[in-house]
Image 1: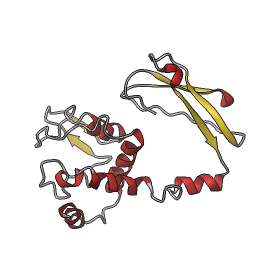
Image 2: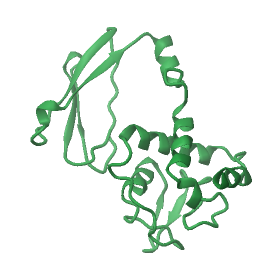
Image 3: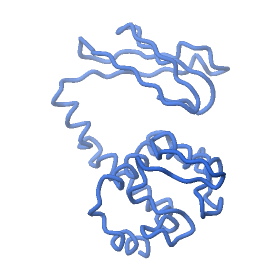
Image 4: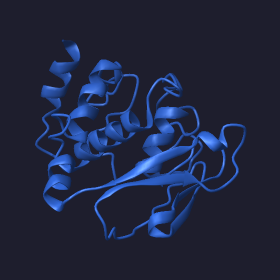
Amino acid sequence: MTSEDVIHDFFVPAFRVKKDVLPGRYTSLWFQATRLGTFHLFCAQYCGAFHAGMLGSVIVVQPDEYERWLAGSVLGETMEAAGGRLFKENGCITCHLADGAGPAPSLLGVYGNTVHLTNGQTLIADDAYIRESILSPAAKIVNGYKPVMPSFQGQLTEEQILDLVAYIRSLGRSVDNEPEKQQEEGKK
């Protein structure tokens, strides 16, 4: 979980679980649901004028139904596939060329590896770094590249950002993604 603005709180009274959701940081919460159904979730940290409207639901289903949802069969595509589609639709593929020859670094194999920044620092490309690079691309510039990427803040939903992160993560796993194939797709 992460927040785009202030501290929030993920609270599910039916399961007696509560966890802070912090800006710029990922937090997680694990619990085991003991009943099927739909349960209310709330923000339990006063977060501003629309705090009372921060409502949601936790939907507990049978394991086989969850597996179908997790596999992407509900929407017809996996997170990686949805991220790949968004990568093309938003023009990312035109700058992030597989061979690194574009105005932005190649993303093949970047996930989980060291990234060298223009300020001399290094970091590991993880979910938080990729998310920040999508929303605030000028925050950490990769060495050898100029800060030309536009911000996608307010243009993508959190679900779309997670799909893009999943896609970029998959590029790190699959060495069989031929750079030529990605470049050819970018030319279409």
